[in-house]
Length: 397
Image (cartoon, rainbow, N blue to C red):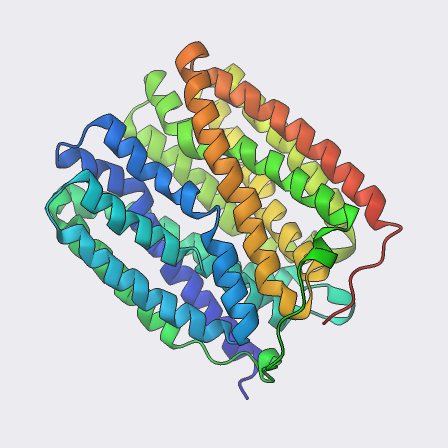
């Protein structure tokens, strides 16, 4: 039976490899599409596929993992599937062919964040469902480090070698992911695999506190769609150079890593709701400031520093509550719902609605709308906190 530290080290390596692959694909795939002469509409369609796959793929992977009891093996299979799907990037550049390859890549990769977080939470979970935020942050920061590494190195690499090497680079990154997944031991706390069907999800979902939690999560992550989908375009429209845009993105990742490394000093499991309310309020402040002061580089740089709370602290607090709301063999599906309801639904609605809003009123309007969504998220988190004072957590199954 592997010890907890070995499992956590393997999960940290997997997180680094996964987000390193994301750091290659997400920022540079659109540039590769453009280098092949694909029209802007086709590029937008290919980029949007990640949100569509997040509507269903994480939950399917979570169901498979909860039924099998072997999250490690599911992740190993998913990594191999990603590697095989990436071979489709070498085909002639047709929208249909690339669309199938990219769709499969996103669908298979949807397993990694929820299942790896479920493994980490399971190893760190103490009596009552609480997790140690200090140890969680020290594992999760490796994902941010992997993304930051490949974003920086990728810029130099593609500038020197040209975008034609993108498919081969992606295959190399996914090979690293396969090797990292292969090192995952069978987690110590999931040794006994039940042959019975996993417990149903509905009793946990029908609790009002869980409903308010997911509604709050939806609004906060809807606000962040403005960042992920329109921030670079907004800055470009204001005349920022590419190094300035890249520097502002890098600044948010640096503070994210710093928070994950140090969060154990401030973030306690008994205060998770307070952190979520604070993160939602700061989300509103961050994006209102971005809309109002977008033309001032130093103001935007300071606002990017709020990413430590609006994303990193928010994410850790969500993982802590999910571990309590969805214990035992519900855990992988609970983490998957986090991806589906948080990133899938909000990503699709935010991208489509934001594009329409930007076309009518400009990119700044997207950030004003994000500020409103942040406030709605804060209200929902406040209601969730009030309910959680009087409702006991679901018993572990």
